[in-house]
Image 1 (tube, helix red, strand yellow):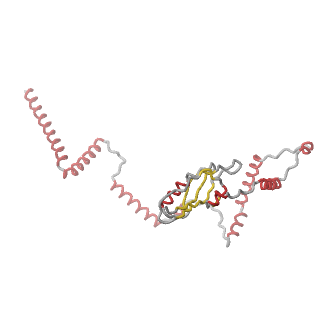
Image 2 (cartoon, one colour):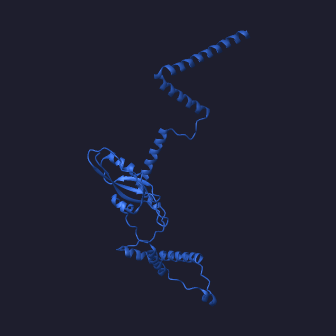
Length: 276
């Protein structure tokens, strides 16, 4: 008899397990292969999960649904509006001491009234006292020299007179400006380079042109005599400008003397292109 009951119980248990497996398989199949059922199944699953959490006590007790929270806020606001219509809440605000309002016609009168107020005088006195203490700390009184030490102190020189004398001596010792070199004048050089001796200058470039042309180039020379850069004064033929720039970059000038300011000098040099 007991064996019969045990056999029946096992059959029921196997049947329930098989039914549960079929239900789970159907649920997974519907979730994967039927897109239309996915939103409803997800909603049902969330609802079931929420109910289970409530039953097991895992749901937060203080959590309020959004709809219920919105209704509560509307009720509270409505009650506050009704209370505000019946009572002036500004009466319950605390009174703080406020400075006396200065009524004057002009800004000068306002400033005068402000300076004559006791609060402004008190702050001014404290500020002056603070400055006096800081001045005493930063600038202590110098010791008073004795009669013997005072007699040994040299007389102070007039710095203004010394500066004027120095300027006159520098102007006297300053060499006269250098004269323009004859070679540079013949080449048509203008500017500070007219006094700079040319150490190396190649023959003018030979290039075929249809019309004779003259291009004036601005040249910057470093203190060591090397040509730094060349730029045309007026834009013209790009090919002629390129050739003239490469030609002038090969020039070499004399270095500046050591007693002269080591600065970059500039000048203009014309380049003539003749018919071949």
